[in-house]
Amino acid sequence: MAKARAIVKRRKAIRNIRKITKTMQMIATAQFQKSLRRAVASKPYSLKVRELVQELAASVGDVEHPLLRQPTDADRKRKIALAVITSNRGLAGAYNGNVLRAANVFIREQVAAGNAIDLYVAGKKGISFFNFQKRPITQRIDLADPVRFADAEVLAEQFIAQFVGGQVDAVYVASMNFKSASTQRAEVISLLPLAGVKSAEPASPAAPAVAEPALHKTVVYEFSPEPMVLLDELLPLTVRTALFQCFLDAATSEHVARMISMKSATDNADKMVKSLTMQYNRARQSQITTELSEIMGGVEAMKGG
Image 1: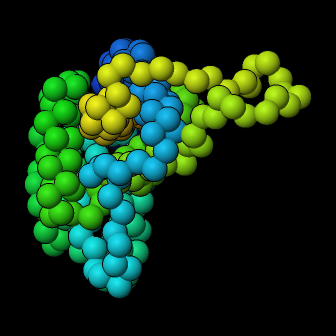
Image 2: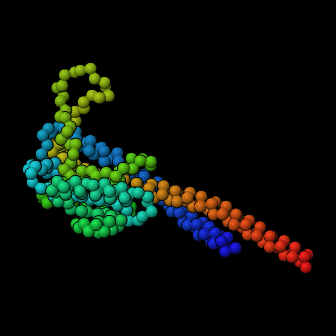
Image 3: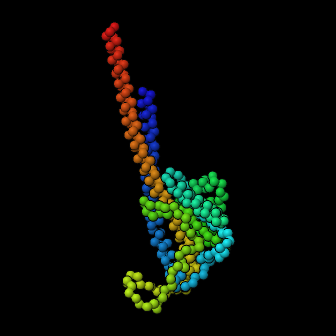
């Protein structure tokens, strides 16, 4: 009876845990849907801003701007700011582990190259990890949940000021890049200097006519005010929107990771309850068989007496 009673208590505990994991799965699903709408809604804007900057850069030609500054001395040691975006809560599967692993690989590569790293960490999990590694953290980023653009803008302005002032030579962001509900990838992306702006070819209205599909014709824009004036406004905006998009993708990836993790935990709890039920039935059957044998033995003993 003691074994059967222990199985009943364990099964009851697992059923209680299943209720918790099921509730957390439902909450994560609701948060994921809300976060997904924000991330999907803002991504076209971020892409369009970058596209517009490329068109402006193409019209100007050789663009010179403080946010496009590249290190000139290859032998000089560079100072790099790395922002690592993790979560405040756990139970999200390998979400934090993948982000921190990617950040660690990047840090080791930069340290091996002789560069100095300034760490900016968002999320309690990342702060605990780097504290455990005894790696100094320059700033702990504390943002609201969900992240607001105004908060990300303040951080972006801080990075821009440090980059323009020469305090850092590059700014990188280590976070989870949200591709789809089934695909999230931990990446370290370059925030500053802005990449992909000078790669745009200048538009040539006098280009000779060639056999080219109509959908790929070159479009010449007229800008008002002048392109350089617009670039002074749009290049910082590109940095702000890119950083904000990183936070949105990270939040969406966190919720989908927690949703999948809690669903897996709920399914495992169901399997354990079924297994314990079978064990309880076998233990109870064995106990009943033993009791019947004892009763029959007692009856036979009375008959013999």
